[in-house]
Length: 198
Image (cartoon, rainbow, N blue to C red; front, side):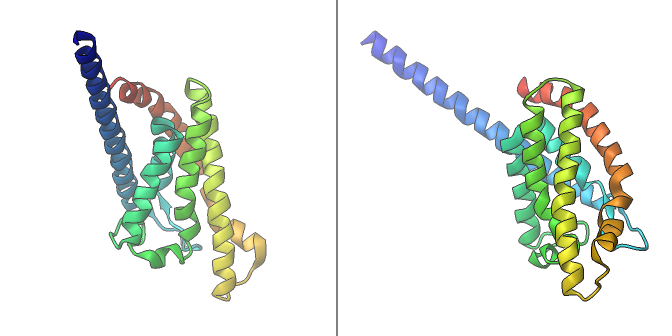
């Protein structure tokens, strides 16, 4: 009888611990979704492209590095869901129409980038792995962003081909996004340790 009660208490404690861990994970994912929304407010516009420079990329990279692939992905899906629902969390506003605009590819690429960053960062320890992961994440964002930007230019009749697409959607951002990757890699390591200790 005593063994059965002990077993039930241990099972209940394990279930409670698992639920607490899930709550912490969901709270962390939501916090990074909110951080990405704040990052969207940090922006400046270049005169030759409708794609702004924002703090979102830094937040996406940090989410993947700190939360890992699964929760990093979840955080950015939460972010996209909030924006599609009409909350003004994107750099240019809110609503599903922004996914069809010039920056829609970048937005769709955010969850994928967080997934890629997390998957690579989880393979090793330290800032070198984190930096490699962040640079791969930036590449994923560019792939989605530039591809959709090219489609958007074609649909709107802007034309110009791949050269114009690269000059307006990738090349102007490489330097600043590389700096964001370095900063995310540096900041992520202590944050990841702190989160795992909770």
